Amino acid sequence: MVMCKPKLLPLKSVTLTKLEKMQRDAQETIRQQEMAQSKQAEPQP
Image (cartoon, rainbow, N blue to C red; front, top):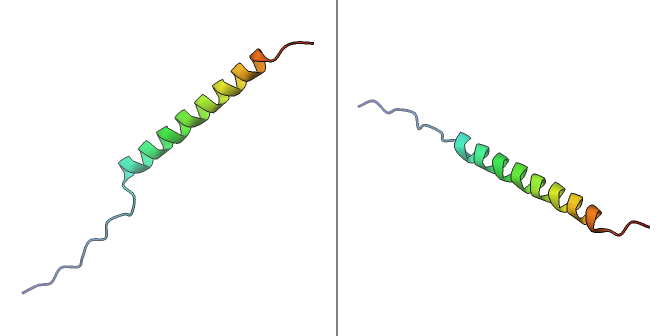
């Protein structure tokens, strides 16, 4: 009987890493849009 070495699985899959990156990018884009809108909403002196 031959024992094979256990295969180590990555803690995070490539797909999960890509999804997290897309989510961070989307949140950053929303944050930038909100900042731009708040600057436009400020009354000009």
